[in-house]
Image (cartoon, rainbow over all chains, first blue to last red; front, side, top):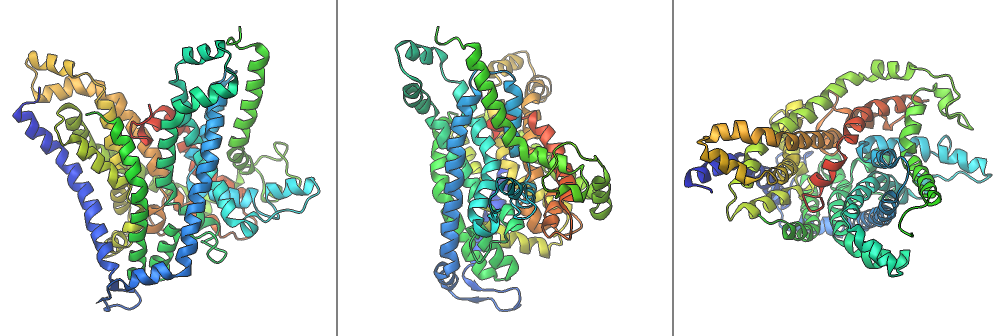
Length: 290
Length: 276
């Protein structure tokens, strides 16, 4: 159906998008790569010496990098565990017959639309504050000592805040996948005497496997770059307790003006994200028949 | 029969689901309620849920103290501007890949997707320096461009999955009737593509509205959208819960309403067609 004429028209139509994305990817990324080999600090203008892998050596051997790496893994892993388990349970619950299903869905999905700075500040002040927060009020009403969430368990608190925002996403996708499940199959299994648990493990879970993988991979891409929630709650502290790789690179480049070191960190972050991206791309690519 | 739900079972699920739904929604509800309290009532212990003197003072004060409407306008310009600009670039690209696919189409699509996987810190410094040298720091123009670029892969992908569902036979029939490329696009494709374009527009406005990495790093006072406006409430001066709540409510309300209309598109757009 495609003629030579329409082929060249098609190529012309696609080129602006390709050129823009190519520029967006290649120019800054090669600049980052270049900077990462320089001694380059914005506070010392003029000095741009080539220093080989020194920045990488400093970045990777800095104890802050190790804690940031661990924090990144805990943050991503913690949020994934909460949202995937919670999402599967919620999706199955929402798939049951009930009154007002649409309204419940709307309530559950809402946190996803709350911008990260708002959710972080609302949780930090109005819920987790050890004096005036709602949790402190509840603790006192129960005769317990209020708990200083962001002081005593800063990373766990941030995991909770981020999970609240992503749980709706996981739920919505898993619910969509669940609704495409063949009802006859479930009913047949029920007739054959399969209990709820064995129906879950042998029919629902295998059916959801794809969607779960997609949720895990997409969330990982976004969770590796969690930034605003940390910036407005803890500023990465106390110490490095809530600094993830993204925040560490931000602090090094825009707070300490160390362009060289920050760039090396940026490249490390790109490599880490690529490891996940390869798997995600393979999943999506398998599903795409052009 | 076992699979026809009994009334009791339905009631049980209704109760559980409504309770959980309420708990998940509660932080938003609590923020909205607190925004109508006085500062003293906002930190009262035990707190009151609805029996307090409702007031609009916080909204007035937030506007007076930190110029809510200016930041709101910045958010509108950035989210709508970047989305419309993105659509202008993406519609022709997605159209050609959906209707005139070549051997390269799949690779091009996957490559476009891969640009979305690039973590923003990987390019933070160059973008910051380029913006500084080009005088784009803290300008709406600069943010529209950056937000457009980070969402462009999603826009193209969403449009592509919608366009691909338009049957090619219709185009062939139009061509047989002697329709040229122009009338083909104008009279055949456009009407069928409008719903997909509208969904894409909606989802991307939401994503751009809530974007909080580049907006925080590339803006100061002048062009800060609502994400950065709220971040300025992170260092409290005295009593501020009620004002924080009013500012937060105003920042999320517009997008919450838009968001509820876009639930289905969300799944499709954010999973790149892998879950439908």
